[in-house]
Length: 238
Image (tube, rainbow, N blue to C red; front, top):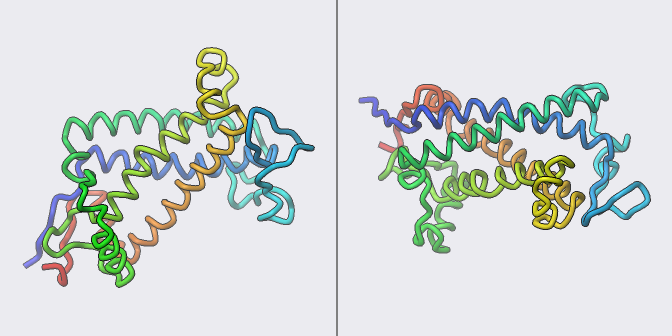
């Protein structure tokens, strides 16, 4: 008999759909913005003759991110900024709404709470071995998040996304005048730009790994659960 579990609430599903669009557009437009000055620095200042810690030229011979990775595909800084700022607002307000809803419906406490036992080396090693063996679900608790899922989701929701939002605000000259403490918090506009880039790479890497695991876990079942909320327990886990 087929067993199903109600795995994702409506708020989680809506937030997932909004994020899927927002992050793709933000990453693509952000790479176009990076092409305007394809070097990164630490500190308050950085210009062509300063020593960067990162150059796009180290990755791409042309010295810029290729058009197949950027939005828009041809160089247009003004349009990229419009896309980026619009979907930065979408990302920020969607995250705020999701966090409030998840506190109200206890999603964080019920599904993402990291307990002390979860961080035990034995538990982490067992979960890593299960992932390497392509076993992604606990047969005793079907539908529950495993330790690596909890840690990755918590790190993205409470660290990477807030970092990318706050450092984005720090790079705004208008907000610098209103909230000068942001520059002090991140050590200057160039440091904020670097941290913004690192957080964006973090989100991009998470997205790629997440998609790969969805495919390995059974793309049909996983898509059904994030669209309808209902997840079918695999035969081997029953």
